[in-house]
Every structure is written in structure tokens, then in C-alpha cells.
Amino acid sequence: MASSKVWLSKVWLTTAALVAGGLLPTALGVPFQAPTVVGVVDIDRALEGSPKMQAERERLDALRKGHAERLEALDKQLEQMKRDLGLMKRGSDQAEMAALEIKTTLERGKLLQELFRREMDVESERGLIALYSEAERATAEVAKLKGVQVVLRMNANPSGDDLSKDEDRAQQQRLRAYDRRTVWFSAEEVDLTAAVAKYLKVLGEKAPAEKPAAPAKDGSR
Image 1 (spheres, rainbow, N blue to C red):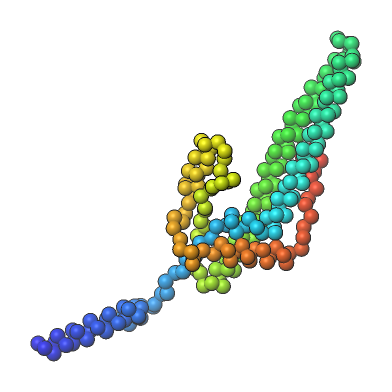
Image 2 (image 1 turned 135 degrees about the vertical axis):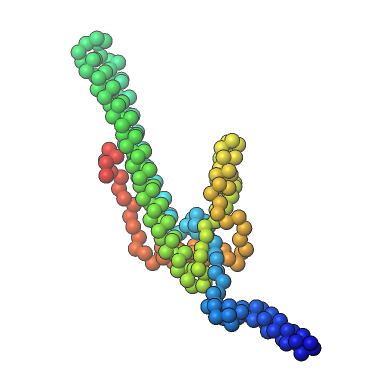
């Protein structure tokens, strides 16, 4: 009986040692699997200071400025047309033709505004896809260097200048941030944001500078 207790004690001690050392699966003939290392990254914050983000903002600003200048020129043309109409004899063929040209120009202005809006949407989306693609590559490289197998995206709560001045809209922004959230807690040591941001900065400094694309005339590309 005593020998049985000694044998059981040895079994329990051996099993405990295997469990503590993570060797029990191997001892049972099951391949040992190392725990998955998970990291997190705030992609928006990582991209914020990247050279490509700055270049993309400049590109969109140039496009937006070109649209604004053409619409402003059209407004000035309309004002002049209206002044000329005021000098014409009411009811005359000349006045009727001038009024028709004003109406046509107004419609053209509305069409241009819509075309410009669509172009800005398409160009913004195109730029974001390029930025996210680069961030994806940078995140993968950083994860490999740090031995991380899975990287989750985390989103910081909007605050300060990120929030609308309107209280109702600010509340909606906070709610959307919670709805989008995937990571609800992460320790500082698993946050890869700073490393990804640094990697993106290095990539941007090595890449050849791109000139902002010149806006197309009348919203066409």
C-alpha cells in the first residue's frame, strides 16, 4: 500500500512538472504548439505622420483648389452676364438670348459641382486604398520582426479636435467609435503602432517624391 502511494506521488509530481514546462502534450504524443502572439495597431495614428499621408493631403488639396478656382471663375462669369442683361431692353431677342445663356451657365455650374464632388470622392478613396495597402505591408513586416502572429486593429476614442462642436454629432461620433471597436483592452507591450509608424516614415523617406496630380478640366479624368 505504501509503495502504491509512493508510485502515485511520483506520477503526480512528474505530471505537474510536465504541465509546468509545457511538455505534457509532447509526452502524450501530441505535437506541442506555442501560444499565438497577438499584437494591436492603431492604423490611423500610424499613418498620421507618414510622408505618404502628407503627400496625399497635398494632392487632394491641389485638386480641391483647382475645382474651387474654376467654380469661382464661373461665378464671376455669371455675375458679368447678369450685369450685361440688366443693360439690355427687357423683352428683346437679345435679352431673351442672354437670359437663356445665364440659365444654361447656371445648370453647367451645378453639373460641374456634382462632377467635382464625385471626383473628390473617387480620388479620396483611391488615396486611402494606397495608404492602407502600405500600412498593411508595414504592419506585416513589423509583426514578423517582433514574432507576432496576429495583429488586430484598434481604434482610439475621438477627442479634442476630432470631435464635432455640435453635441449631438459628437455623441454620434463616440457611438460610432464604440461600434467599430475590435480591441477593448491591450497592454502597452503588445501595441505595435509606434513601430509601424516608424517603418512607414522610413518607407516614405526612401520612396521617390511624387508630384500632386494636376486637376482635370471640368471634372473629367
